Image (cartoon, rainbow, N blue to C red; front, side):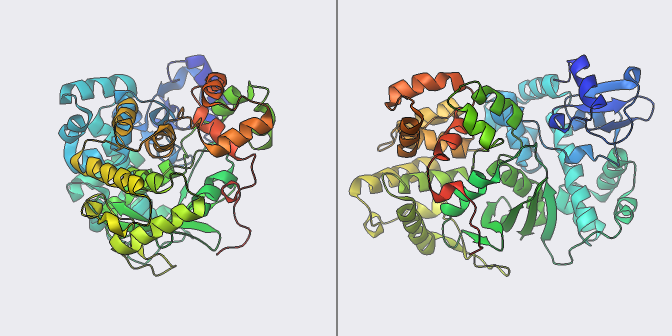
Length: 492
């Protein structure tokens, strides 16, 4: 996108917010970089330069605009649409791997050398992994400076900086303000004085249809781990340095996010996982245009543009829940999961609601007694086989995993058919082209719409929906009268 100069210029001159996060505009005269929708008067064309990432603009010596806050724009949809090594690297960087394990850890997870990873990421993003992680630390620091009363030394540590000096230098370089000046600019805003509690806004590209997105999460919520309370979806989070509780409320132009963390070093990872959960970095215009080209789907797209794919904050958790949900109703799957949580989940304290546990980790389920599971023996064996594979690493569902390889690993496990594999690919791995052709709800919708109902014939027809078949599934499911398609009118 950033190499198409004419298209970028048109986007900037029209202040088109659909392109926020796709590229960044740097102004030679002011040495400032902005998002395309910046409200200021567009600069002269000859003074514009375009970069693929905020980190690239920063590396070129530009500082972030104080008006449009380009560092807080939605992320590029490319990193969630693609499965190549650069996209996988970006998902891992977003999850904080470079901060925790360095570039060597990033390269090891991807199976490449450090030099290969640095070269490929630099070529496409205009900045290396360290610069991208630095930009993310700067954004985390800004959030903490502006929304909390924490001492600056604590913020530096929580944001992942190695020293106060590095923290001060980075904030000054990126925002052209010292940390104290940055905090002083926020007047009249709400700052939390509760340790570890933050309120922030998660931006997205419009349009967004919250009905199926939040409806699905609410209808399938596991008691103790998830809940719908006071108009917000809440759930517990298992994070690298501790745990957290998040509250997510849909608003017209953002998702209101309230995070309670036991360790603020997990802030960047928590935000990344919440955005992933709600598919907030998607490009709904591109998706809807492709799907609406099919006359059968066109009315569905027009009625509810911007549907997202509800995902998960923990891929291993969703895989376990997918097995528990094999050939049973939504209510039965929730019951099975709730029993597992009570028996093996980690208890937590929730001062603002009724959450009680973290979903059990794969390691905590490794010694699970199959006789305690109220389900057929074949499904017990499937669950235990999955847990064993997750613990041993024979199945990789991590953010930087390869989607094709993960499918093959899952399909090799006993009891894993197309429905389970594609459900995990769609909601845990985030493959936008995952397609559950054997799903009962999809089959009923296909019959209602006059589409082929056999898995083979429907898959053949769905080829015209590629690479967005996971989004087509959301529209097909929405044709039925099921709780997953709507947000409850009254909070539980």
